[in-house]
Image (cartoon, rainbow, N blue to C red; front, side, top):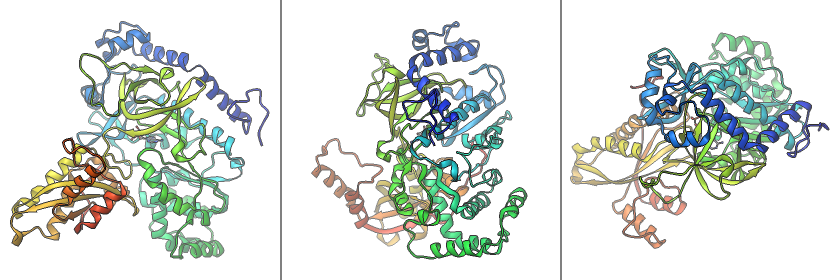
Length: 598
Ligand code: AMP
């Protein structure tokens, strides 16, 4: 029921007084985007004026944009490595931030094969909570009645480590779920989850998923929305149900919890809510035992109004599979965030995935935009790039996001390419175009061309004793199975047909490639089970020449033709697959531990 509030918003009539405040905040902040940005930059530069970093660039206490832009360089993670190392090794002086660094957030972006370490400060949790608090008030504008039911969200914590200097290093969501902001959040009828904290915080991923699925099944009539952070996570939950529904329905039928769930607090919670319910067990069994799982989400959780998962960027590849399992339920992408900073939200969350635009909230950080010319490689040294302020970006143009945060990143290139689609008040709205330099991604892994090249080189060493080399290769993220996996097409040149590499050798090549890929990939394979074994498909000799002929027939220049290192265009896939002579899968998991290699 909408309320008639003095704070009524142009976004629509708020569902309750608290929503009215949130919507008013969005309107206020986006209406005064430029002055909010001014305030944010002044706050960041004032409080951090004595830090080693700002002193080094002789800001001398200036807080205006012009001085800031003229004195501070635009940087990447690599430029900050020395400072990050010192903080990680225990230097507690005010290097980047006047506020103590409370922990490191481990990004899914990597540097030298390991997750990037993003320093953060305690108060950033408040900013994250603030952004989360805006999501339901916006959703309530589009989907009424969500306070009458619950959300089935599959949320997980991941392993954490300590740096040599004793700071915790963990993913941003793990940090958030383990914080009091999440654990002791006040009751909010619009945000009730079927998963208890005991399940979300259980470090064992099988037990956590099992308990969350069981709770979701037990409360199936109350579930109004189903979600996970990313599309890949929700599909993993569906796969889990495929593999475990027999045991789950047995637990529901008998009221006795699967003995594999050994976590004491989880057992204690589940023992309280699990009672024999043969009728529910039969109903779930009836649906799950069918061969055809099309629309399974809507069949089991019949009151679901939408799926809450990110399907923009690399996750767009999962839209057809999600549509299949959900029977075409709407897909809502609500927010855009990273370890470095939470950026903004989608003010029209029920729009089609292809139309999703995120409105950057000007209070989260100071934002600048590096114009991105799709076909240019870098910029000439004598003309430094001209960065544009948040309110000055132009509709239709593409930019790389550059941020200055309260935690002490100054003019830091995030690596995301965004296209301006419009404005809400004076705050721009962005379509997420892509992350720079990402060739392959299944879950949160991001593999670039150099990493793939190195992996192919390392693996192909195993072919030397067979006098065989890899003459050409390309790759494909195969998401038709759950979990998805990397496929690498190899064209081989063997000089000794009597001694060509066996299936066993090519399997070892798959594993060698996996060993060589970055730690986020290996964690996905080993700990999260979110990526399946890598596959090498050997293609007939001459296949890559045919690929070139095909590209040239479609207008590519013969002089400039380069083998694409990743493919997903159907005719090319069909051409490659029709030339496959053998296929080989990695026979084991690569090495991975939470500890960093360096
Ligand atoms: P991480 O630092 O590991 O949390 O990853 C953050 C990155 O994930 C962002 O910089 C984006 O590249 C990507 N990402 C986050 N939210 C979205 C979204 N809503 N749509 C597309 N990509 C996203």
